[in-house]
Amino acid sequence: MAWHRKVLRVDLTNGTCAAEPLNMEWADQYLGQRGLATKYFCEEVDPRVDPLSPENKLIYTTGPLTGTMASTGGRYSVVTKGPLTGAIACSNSGGYFGAELRFAGWDMIVLEGKSPRPVYLHIENDKAELLPAEDFIWGKSVWDTEELIKTRHQDPLMRVSCIGKAGENGVLFAAIVNDLHRAAGRSGVGTVMGSKNLKAVAVRGTKGVGGIADPKAFMAATKAGKKVLHDNPVTGQGLPKYGTQVLMNVINEMGASPTRNHQDVQFEGASRISGEAMHEKRATDGKTHLVTNQACFGCTIACGRISKIDETHYSVKTRTE
Amino acid sequence: MFKSLSINPEKCTGCLQCEMACSYEHEGVFNTAKSRIKVFDFHHEGRKVPYTCTQCAEAWCMQACPVDAIRLDGALGAKMVYDDVCVGCKVCTIACPFGTINYNSDTGKVMKCDLCGGDPQCASACPTGAITYVDSDWTGLEKMRKWAAATDTAPRA
Image (tube, rainbow over all chains, first blue to last red; front, side, top):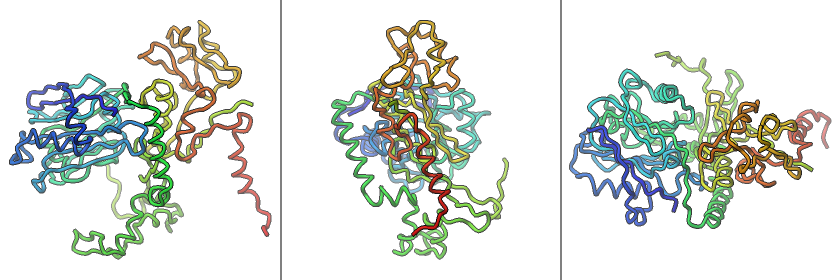
C-alpha cells in the first residue's frame, strides 16, 4: 500500500524531532490508523501512567488510504490514554489535515514527554521543528491560532491541527481541532496535548502519496467504492442532502437521543434542529440555516454543512475578544 | 469542435478529487500541491470554487514565452507546455492575468492545464458534476437552460 514507511518521533521534553522507519510488520498486521497506533501505544506506554503526565504519549496517525483518491480517505486519528476515563482513547477527524500529513511524507507522529514551554510543531515535508508558541498563539482560540500560524509562515496552503483554550486549561473533554471546524472531539485528546504544552501541529506537504503497487487496479477499486457510496440510499442521498443530522429525528423517535446530559432520551425540540429543519426557510429573514455542503478531503459523500444562523434571532451576541 | 472545461461552483463540495486526479494524471502521485486545478474555499461565504486555465485564444503565456515552449495543440485548443523546451524562466507566470500557469520547483518547468489530451481527469473525477467538459462554443448552455426554465411562465397542461 501507499505507505511512506516513515514515523516522526517528537521528544517534547528535549525539543527534538527524529525520523524513524514505520514498523511494517505491525502495519501489515494492524492495517493503519487506529489499529496500528493502538499497537504502537500499547507497546510503548505503561498502562498505569497518569494520562496527563509526560509519560503518556500522543500519537497522530493516518492509514494506508489517507491522501489517496479513495473516497473518505482524508481522515486521521489521535491515540492516547484518555484523561476522562483512564482508558485508551482514539479520536478521529476529517478535514484536510490528515492528507496533508501524508503529502509531507509522514505516516504517523509520536509525541512524547512534555515541553518546558508552550510550543507548536511545524512540518514542511522532511523538515520538522518545534517553535515557541508563547506570546504568539498560546491562549488563542483555534480559529485565531490557525490564522496566526498561516500569516507568520506566509503560507495559506498550510493545514493546522490545534487545541484551543479548553485544551490548554485542562478541560477533560477538550478536542483537537483542524481546518477550523473538524474535530478529533472524543475522549479528551486535546487535554493530553495541552498537558504536553503543545499548542498546534502545522503541516505543509508537497511530496504527495505514491508508490501504489498496482495503480490501475487501485483506481478501478476506488472507483467501484465510490459507486457503492453513490448508490447507497444513506451515503448517496440521506447524508449528502441532510448531513449527519439526517439521524436526529430517527434517533429521537427510537428514544436514543441524549438529552440534558442523558437525563432524558427524547428531546421535544428535535424536529426543529434536525437535518430537515436546516432546509426550511426561517421566519425572520426567509433564508435557510444551511448555506452549502462541505466535503472533507477526497470524500464523495460531503455530509458536512456550512450553515449560518440568523444572528438577530438569538440572545447570544457575537462577542469580540 | 473544441471542448472546454466548464465549472459550476454551486455544485462543488470541496472534496479535492479533481486536484488528486490532476496530479495523478500528470505526476503519477496523489499530490494537491502539484495540481493544475485548484479549489478555493471562501469559508465565510460558504463557497468552494474550482479554478484552472481557460485556454485563452490569445494566450498571454504563449505570447510571453521567450523560447516558444508554449504552443497551441490544434486538435484540442489547449496551450501546451513543452518540457523539453521550457527553461523555467517563469515569465509566463507573470504574463498570465489569471495565475493559472505556475512553476513546479521539482521539475524546474512551468505547468498548466493541458486538458489531458481530451479526457480531463478532473471532470471524470468530480462526484457532483461541478466540473464538466463541454462544447467550447456552448459553455453557457446549462445556464441558458436554467434561465429558460425560470422565465417560462406560460401555463402548462
